[in-house]
Image: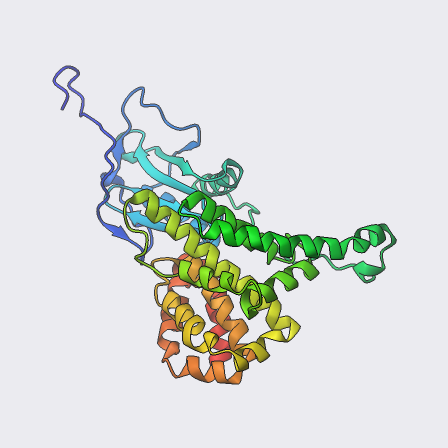
Length: 362
């Protein structure tokens, strides 16, 4: 206790204990720290009255699951470390606002990442803590709206389509700059390169023609084939382990690399180019498939990356019988069941992606 005031002293500590990535957030009211007078809470907080701390924690846990946000829970200190698919890092902490932990105070604190993306997740979490049933999207809606005729036939887009080849050529030219950034020893340039590559291979954020052309260059191999191995190297673990900042960047780069593979493999699978590439190139069997299976085994550690790896495996398995046999020979069913059960409890996107793989393997 503070001898000057007689009140219990309070300090924010950085150490974490009791971290778990395999069970729901089980918080009891008696473990909550009492919020000191005049303690400066973040503006992103809510007071929840008349509800037990365990109920508030369960609501937040479910919101994190439905939004596919990676989280590590510390049940003893009523804290949670969170990372979104948009690489926003934030913390959630519960405090007692009065006797018997009533009200429960929920504070969400951004650590890094885009503010706009943070606010989307923050509002959903705080609304869930209050018991509100919102309409927040659990995963980005990336479906193209249906139209009455082919987009190419729409008069308003004729001038745009005429410039499509120029756009594709520009995207291919960007690959050279991306390759240079990937070879840099600066993390920020590596991240910028991978973010650009993810955009170029996404038909929604780029264009169908450009995404396919770039995907073929990246995953099938041509004059830009070195990018393929540069991206695969980023999926390796225990490469950047010097400090917390380096670990954060390596986690982000690894996830971006798996998203890039998921994008490129999907595009080439739909176009029919992937089947021939898997048949002709040993790289897929010797390097890519083992990499994807290794990531899937670590679903409890990095569910977002494992989800992207699941999408990549689906493209590979539906394109090649030999790849399907190789994957099934690796006793993948136990790994898939583990990832699927974890996704059911903690990560909706991982659950959906692994459920699709399980159906394919049966």
